[in-house]
Image 1: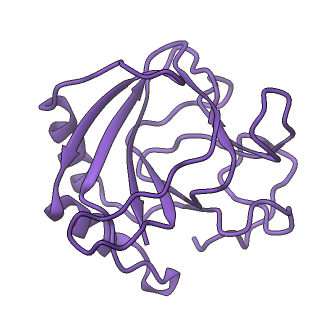
Image 2 (image 1 turned 60 degrees about the horizontal axis):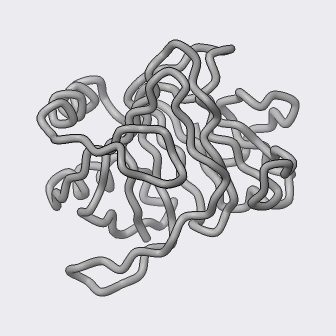
Length: 188
């Protein structure tokens, strides 16, 4: 599957980013890039990390890590034609329990500790499926605000990665009974 070339603007739980919606430029939801063996490595890695629920805009557990090796692996699975050259080593797993969510926001730019280059893109690599009707979609919004129009919603799909420019407004919908788990990182 490629980037935002597939149309499905009617559903907010789609797995394909509509290509004709203003505000979604640069948003890509890619599927089937990460083998199950790699996803199992991520599961094991996540469970070995301490968690923190301290955050003012989300109800979730975050597990922080810094790994150049993991950053290189993630980059290696991304299609070269997307043009990304570096994944920052500073990442975190985010676990949204039932009722978990994140409020509308835009992501900040991060400066890489090694290259001193600023990131341009956020990544959400989903490690758990959230079934249709169970919430947990990452919704892209027309603006940051509680009543902002939803442009597209990406339902978490194990092994899929959501890539988007830092300045795109988004939120994480409240999760139903299924745990939403992802690896969050930054790249350029």
